[in-house]
Amino acid sequence: MDPNGFKDFAGEMANFITNYLENIRERRVLPIVEPGYMKPLLPTEAPQSPENWEDVMTDIERVIMPGITHWQSPKFHAYFPTAQSYPAIVADMLSGAIACIGFTWIASPACTELEVIMLDWLGKMLDLPSAFLSSSGGKGGGVIQGTASEATLVALLGAKAKMINRVKEEHPEWTANEIVGKLVAYASCQAHSSVERAGILGGVQFRLLDVDQKYKLRGDTLADAIREDREKGLIPFYVVATLGTTCSCAFDNLEEIGAVSNREQVWLHVDAAYAGSAFICPEFRYLMKGVERADSFNFNPHKWMLINFDCSAMWLKDPSHVVNAFNVDPLYLKHDAHGSLPDYRHWQIPLGRRFRALKLWFVLRLYGVQNLQKYIRSHVAQAHEFEALVLEDPRFEVVAEVVVGLVCFRLKGSNDVNEALLKRINGAGNIHLVPSKISDVYFLRFAVCSRFSESSDIQSSWKEIKLRAEEVLAEQPNSK
Ligand SMILES: Cc1ncc(COP(=O)(O)O)c(C=O)c1O
Image 1 (cartoon, helix red, strand yellow):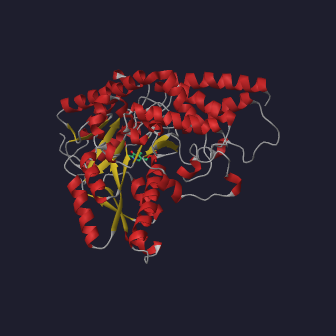
Image 2 (tube, protein in one colour):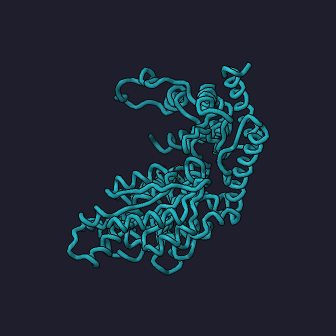
Image 3 (cartoon, helix red, strand yellow):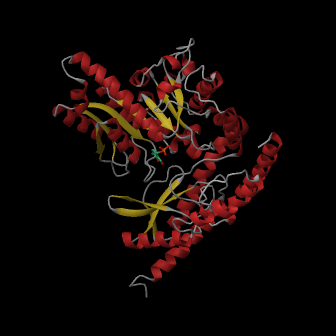
């Protein structure tokens, strides 16, 4: 492709993207294709000679769009949001053009330096304690991981290395394997599956602890578990507190958990993957009270802060534990400026890393903090609007406190009737929701996800839910 071809292709793609996004409401949010739908639409081999970009453009609607679940549609209420905005898309274009791999400072100084500065900007937007910021002049600093799952694992590995070193000082006769066999980590039973998975990947035991009636992990529960485990000769070393659980968006009591973690000298990691974006608004910061007690903190701007996947922001008060845990230093990766700024390869699992800080820079500059706050507040207001609609209808109930953008609700009655309702909603394909279950109670999760979502979308999604509920209820044996 020559430069003029690129300009035409990119221009046409910009047209396509704006048409797609600005008219996304008109598309069926869930695709109706069957598994394997694509095979007959494509040749079995790559073309030997070049095709026209115009033909590629045509195939987007023919081949790709029929198999897309439209995550950016205001009719999409499943999971949690995944963010997207025009400035972030343009930043990804530039990142694709520069195409550097920023594993060390010298591998592309701007890639590292913008990331350091952006993580400070972002940390200040959340009012994180200065100990997490590189501008504080201490050890702390931030890094962009690909996902919250990676952040949880990286923190766990740092905590593991730190505890092994500490125990070895007390018991030089113990081998690392003996120590690892005794290590135990903790999180709430409501923590995301990636937390338990971090334990499996890190080769340590993970205890998932009971929650209170609001689905929060409390300090006493953690303290009891730690005491029991110490009595068994185990070594508690890592706690994950979740701010905004995936099932119901519950917030663990960070203040209590922080006090116990600090007293017991275990590493405290905060997983605020979805809800962390809300902390750019001062009125939600009460939910992260106690954050100064954490060793590491993570949230995903790629979920709810208008930055396209992947951009998972992580801060560490003392990155040296992580850096030392992963430090393998071949000659070809050494450089003269070593030590003055982070070599981010030591802060993450892979070696390679894209220039992701550009997305943060573009979005923060082109929206400004005030518009990002407005965006968060509008989603929270829409969630409360939906909550009010549910509460007005005596056939339904809300099953968890609505704090930010997620409403957990169900038809009063059996799990079966709620399963039937969800099946019917998703079968109709006009809106998309996913379920959850806590203590054997099945419910539906309604997340406000789209950048385009407005009050009228909430009203029409609720209309659709009521229609499907009426159909399901009419089929119940005692409905007549
Ligand atoms: C609370 C929580 N933690 C972790 C994750 C995993 O996020 P990621 O896909 O960035 O690993 C999620 C995903 O929704 C989540 O809700």
